[in-house]
Image 1 (cartoon, one colour):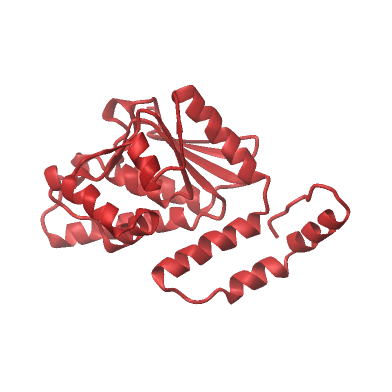
Image 2: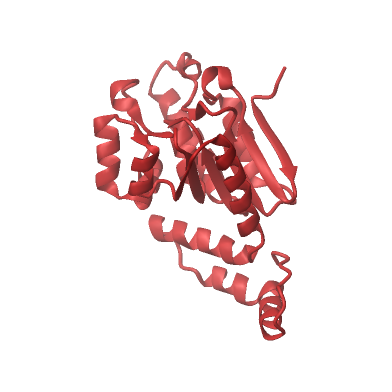
Amino acid sequence: MTAELLYETRDGIGHITFNRPQARNALTFPMYERLAEIAASPGDVRALIVTGSGDKAFAAGTDINQFRAFSGADDALEYEARIDRVLGILERCPVPTIAAIAGACTGGGAAIAAACDLRIANANARFGFPIARTLGNCLSMSNLARLSALVGSARVIEMIFSARLFSANDALSAGLVTEVLLDQPSLEARAVDLATLVAGHAPLTMRATKEALRRLRDNLPPDEDLIRLCYTSADFKEGMDAFLTKRPPVWQGA
């Protein structure tokens, strides 16, 4: 049986692929759990690329079959708690994460993309949460906070109330993605280029920036530990020495 979520590493970059193209890469609970497992401990890589198999969908939300066993409010609360936990782990991944989006990126798929650090899209990408005209469920406050931090509450209201899918250019204008590529090969190549770029930068700088922005959004504790982490690190000493001796730094992430 082919794995529904693939993970491989190449040249110091981890590649996560949602691999259910026959179902538009709709996510099962085991796929969510595997994503969390990788994000929590990605191995010896400096960046992660998250994408979907084929060019029809990044991920078209949670597979509806996962909801068939729901019998009451407790099932719904457990589901949203599971998704919040998985997305929280992805958001706190110790290395930069890049969502390379082609085709449908909706529901749970859009939530995953929003939890990544960077998002780039194929010109055929469609991004949104059409729940007001489909299932009639809602997003958790954690998801709403994450989306609002990206595009503002007015855009979030527009997206959910209208139940429309943003085109790639709409997503670019709104700030959901930073780049729109012409086709699938261009998207794949740019994702690797971008991952290679950030993989060559100071790991602790990026880790501290990610965490500080998350704390700002969620009104969490101050940043003294993050400042200590960076300024007392071997990487900071290496950066200073490399700058003064006019050579490229060799980052160790410690």
